[in-house]
Image: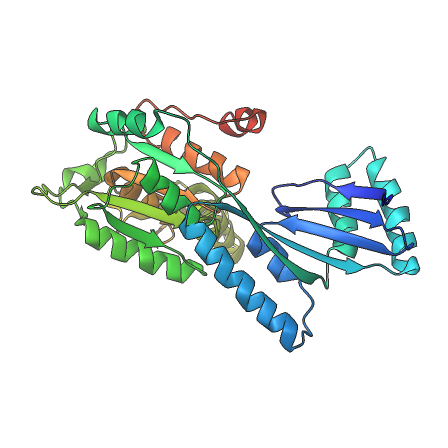
Length: 361
């Protein structure tokens, strides 16, 4: 017996939604939207009012996802729901307009997808094995023995990433793991501070370093402890934490603070601005000297907001860095974090055309 299904439209996968969907008309004339994507993306758009059977299905799916991920399998969650004729008509009209738009097409398609990618019913999860090519574990082990640090940036779940890291010998059993999974900026700061203490990183007390700032100089604002033969340390961090870390940059924060200062003074005649950037990470300060009508004001802006530099110091200290659940732009941010703060030679490798654009941003 043969059945004919009509494909009415498809929303392709993108790094913002982290899912794709297709609208299908079934032989009985019913119309459904089928969605597949990352668990964090699909589980968040499921229907809220669920019965006992649905709650049991969700619990079983979560258990399966954890089990599959721990085995190094790549997982996807599948969900669906019926569309009424009114919903279908509205979606088709918006979809046609968005698909032919000459401006902001991607954003309009995402807004259109949101009309139908909601209140879904969970169907289950899939898991596939993404086998490593022959020689990959040996190649990574040789790189590590040669003193080359290997960082992995992946969109996989944390459990999957760790399992693959172990199978390819990026992570070794005797390696101590620092895991950072923060859900707020303050939590990320605390986790980074704990990680810094665990690594034994201490601010340098050299007084002369506070008087100069050389952009091209080697970064040495932290005293690197001379560790005895101890287990190597690896840093594992998720994309949610990077949201709070990578976007906190020095330049933007200083501009905002300075503009607020000027707006509230109402005494602008002329001013002289001096920046002395301390090399000490935990107590870094920026001193702004303002000369207003002959009155000297000194403003000390503490650099607790220098959260991205804390990540940089911890990451460059660790032997291995594993970033999981990261979006393409976050991958670009990690690459830029290294390229902009060190003169060390870096090599970024991607497995597709998308990465070419990411790495040159």
